[in-house]
Image (cartoon, rainbow over all chains, first blue to last red; front, side, top):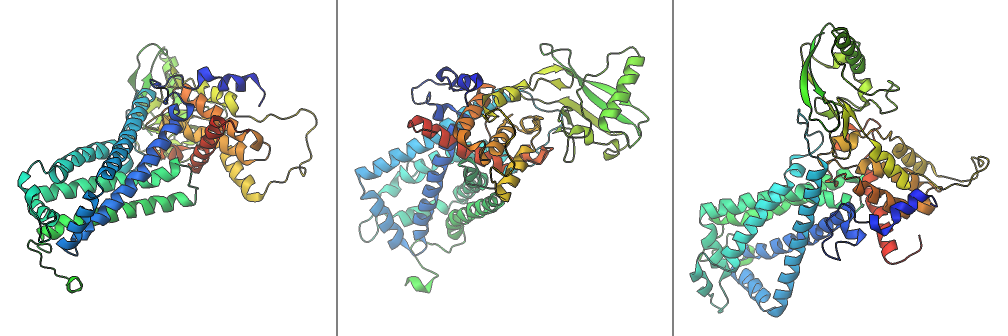
Length: 259
Length: 252
């Protein structure tokens, strides 16, 4: 392209016009552009989905019994300073995911100042339309969840609970927590919102990263929704199992393989 | 057939607009939507009132000039441009809302007419190929496989009407830019400038004040040319490749 129009469009002064470019990092065309920011949301989204799956696999160790989940928790804690490195990385990922989304949302509001008289959602799913709501409510849940089970701020006596091998008795703490139907209901509702968020998010990130085609997109959309609700089933199974008495303290396994 | 129209009336870009109730009486079902507006306008003029301003050109669904929003749907119900909507599509006595495209980057000029020059400026940034002048090359000189030719042709079907940005809750122009980038970047004539084109057109799109794609696919639902949103995935790919190659100083 040798036209003057092309030169104009590639001049550096135009690169981040109309965008907030407070820090030097955000003034990079990649990060200040609409697609660049969406890539950050999608990239951090992948990492968060992987975390959610990893966290779920860890949680499911409650089913084989206290020995498994207490050992798993002890193992995590034994990472020591490395655990804090992981936590800081996670916090950065969450921060980037939210910051870029807020920037995009802010720009979208300016770009579309007036709605139509007759609302028409056309092809847009309820999952896609509720992304901000489900995301925000879920982040409030995460803060509650950390205060509840990581800092154990609501029931400080659970910190002193230890099992026969002297490990922190996470199993007993979880059974005590989920025996409260309100806590269980809140957890199930929250992971339901997460599943809604992922129902759009998983398929959407493939599109944003440019990994879809006309043929693949419906598969990603269906697959993403299935993965999202499998994650929901996994997470919801724990409070449900406690409420239904399948998981009890002291441990009495209904499964003969675990004995 | 009789209809209650709610027409958007706005004198100019700077004045606020509002809906005005206009009765469209004794309209034949075979009337197109634009013909119905013509009849309504004739009656308004006969009554000494100001006719409603709207655009149209080909009236056969290929130019995209008649860009209006009928009952919240850019280009009206069904696939195709607004001029291809017929009054038999509506119920007798129905209230029909007629509005201009609403997007910050498409300022309203008058009533139902918006300024869509933003799309032209995006095209100027990279929606072309640099070609030597002279006689037309032989058609057989450059080989293009059938699937590539088909995909490029599907994207080239875009008429630049603006319905995608008008339908998008974020007023994003990604389907339009994606269609143009896909059309040119797939073909051998457009490939040498593929990365530059994606970079330049996305930057121009951002500068015009269009929003960001949230993968809602409302654009795909209203596109009169049935452009598939897979062109947006192609645009995302080519744009990032373009930005990275520029950032690392690679020659593209």
